[in-house]
Image (cartoon, rainbow, N blue to C red; front, side):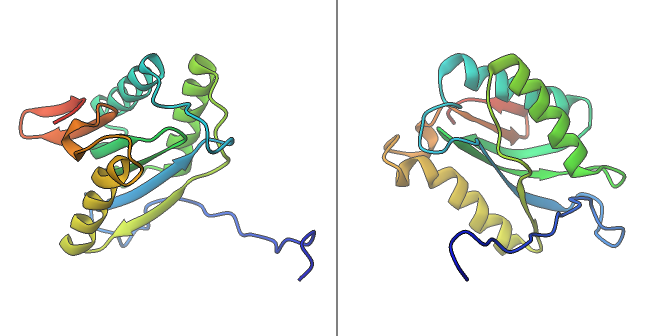
Length: 159
């Protein structure tokens, strides 16, 4: 196929299928439109993004297990209410954060349902170690741009 011809890509609906059990976890990746530039980990931007995510969490729009910001994208492990349409939630959240922070987000996002504990553990490890692999910090627990669920609630910052 010539370089200037791109295949037509289907749009994904990003809703939770009716047959998926309540509380199912999803691995989510959202990218900035411009990659390779620090955008999400500047102090003010990071704080507003994580507080906006916590706002949705506190209003039961989603339940965050882990969200970690990288300079030009973020990963999360999230569950959604059965009636939620993930695309609508992320569109609304991205619109707010774009308006507040001037972030230009890439259209859409990637989601993958985590089907068992092994997948959840693997994605959790992948997310937590992402800043270490990119030489942004020495240990996962040192990375300040994250939101994680603990028995005490949702916490922002390094572990």
